[in-house]
Each structure stands twice: as structure tokens, then as C-alpha cells.
Length: 433
Image (cartoon, rainbow, N blue to C red):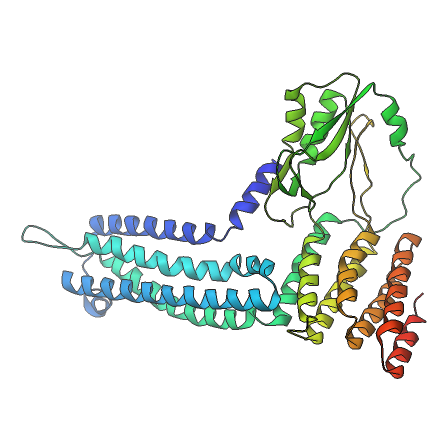
């Protein structure tokens, strides 16, 4: 079930899914409303008749005008979208183009205009004016008129949305929101006092099995998803212990050592294949199980902002501010253990897990390295360490913060030319708890 949900999530997030779905709805509505018109026998009279076409030629003119306008505006919408994609790619990085392509408003607008165009073509084909037959799809034409008015409003909304969506603060805030949602999904529990539990000894567990086999990767690309429930079920069924060497987000090469399987008897190719099918790969990283995915997107924006060609330290500072919120949240959650037990309490899987130090490295290492010529960004990085040190409660959290603060301080001593800037940095460095 989880694997199906992953595939469904990937399908619905593709650029073409929503436009194609809206076009399909337009086709269904065209056929349905024409069917209703053919059996309704509705004859407008009084003031109502002014809202319906009075003749087949009038209906054809209305539908033709709407169809021509919609396909013309659809071309304009495509052009605006391409311009936004070009600006996003050059300023924020090509990997962020996906965020614009997957934007629901952009997809909905594109699908709606094309859908209404196809709708008008289908209804236009049903308008008849011959000697033996005269048919005017009144409700279908009236619906096309209402949708044309709605699409004019939608065009205004779309232009406003595009103008907003290419602003740096909006993009950074959007990525930050996705990062926070991803973190709250992967780390839902608050830090609490855990009861003393026996920590499994993986080396001892390995010695309980007679043989070991390497589970090789079956694809070239990023590890996108591990179906942990199915993998645990398969490990329990085959009575094996699996040591994983990679986690979602890692780039793998075909035939690379993905995991090691310990068992009492050698598994055949079919059994190893069943284990391998619970690891899904692809050409791009996905956020479903990759907690560092959005962090790397944020870091990419900051790194490009600090490049000599752009030289925009304020965008980098905005990225740091948003990363502080995410890392502060991580000080309050419980990171998952590397050991996975089955229902009987038998150790079955040792996973490659995320750590607070690893998340800190992913968030701040690259920004610090690119910011050596920007004292304001270096000082803001140190302020970030001061803020995080106030949230840190355990040695596992405090040690990485102190390590990064020391690296920032060393970089400031090396590259700062102004003595007062260095004093400001030192003042913040001394506040690290």
C-alpha cells in the first residue's frame, strides 16, 4: 500500500497529470451537457432567452469565438510560464525549475484553457442547422460562456501568481514550508524521556548467521523510496538480518553494494530479487523519505546568491533564517534508531539513518564555504549557531553546533579585513552555549 501511495504521489506531482485530468473533465462535461440538451426540450422565454443563443449560427459564432480566444490565451500562458522557468533556472538554479512546473495554479490554468478549447470544439460539432434537423445545445453554450468569464478572472490570478512566484522571498518561504512539512512527517515525535532499552549489538547478531550475501543495486540513479514494511515482512519471512548501506537521497550505481543479507542458508536469486524490489530508484531526488532534499534546494539558492555573478547576500541570509527554523525543530524531535525489530522482537534490519550532525552539515557547510567573501553572511551564520545553541539539549546536538561555530570563527579570522567585523563575529561566537 505504501508503495502504491508513493507511485500515486509521484504521478500526481508530474507536470502533465493535472492538465490532462482537467482536459478529460472538459471532454466528459461536453458529452454530458450535449446529452442533457438533446433530451431537455428547454425553450427559453422572457428575460432568460437573452442569455441563450437564438439560432444555430449564433451558437456557432459564440463557440468559435470562445475556442479561438482560449487557444490564443493558452499560448500566452505557456509563454509566460516559459519566461518564469527561464528566470527561475538562471537565478535560483535548474533543479528548482521542478518547483515551478509542479505548481498547482500553473498546471490548473494551462489545463483549464486547453480544456475549454476542446470543450467548445466538441459542442460546436453538435450544432446542426439542416432542413431536417436543427439542434442548438443551449445549456452547453451557456456553460461555455460562464467558463469563458471564469477564465478571464483566472488569467488575472495567474499573472499575479507568476509575478509573486519568481520573487526570492516567496520561493525560499515555499521551500521552507515544504521542508518543515517533510520534517514533521519524518520526525513526528517530540523529544521525551525514553525508558532504558537494550541496544541491539549488530556484530553479535551477524555472528548468529552462517552466511552473508551482498544485495546489489539494480538501477543507476537516486534511491527514492524504501518500502520498509514490505522489506521487514520479507526479512522476517526469510529469517534474515539486513544491513543497509544507503538511505533515500543517495545516488547509486548499478551493481553497487546496496545492503548485506545475513542468513543461515544462502538465498537464491529469486529471494534476493524479492528483497531488491522494495528499493525504488529514479533519475531525480524525491522528498517522500529524503529529509535533506529541501535543505539542498535551500542551500543551492544561497550558494547561487553568493556567486560573483549574482552577489546577493540578502537572499543567502533569508535562506539561513529559514534553515534556522527547521534545525531548531529538529532539536525537539527524536531521530529514528538504526535498528528495526520484527513483531517477535528479533533484530531484522540495521538502517543507514539521519543524524542531527548530518543535517547541520547539509544545511550550513556549503553556505559557509561560499560565503568567505561576504562578512554579513558569515556573521548571520554565527547568529544562527547562537540561536540553535539555545534550543540544543543533548551532547549530540551541542557538539555539532559548536563544531560549526568554530569553523565559522576560523573562516572569519582568515578572510575578514575589517577589525570591527571580526569583533562582531567574536562577540557572537562567545555566546555559543
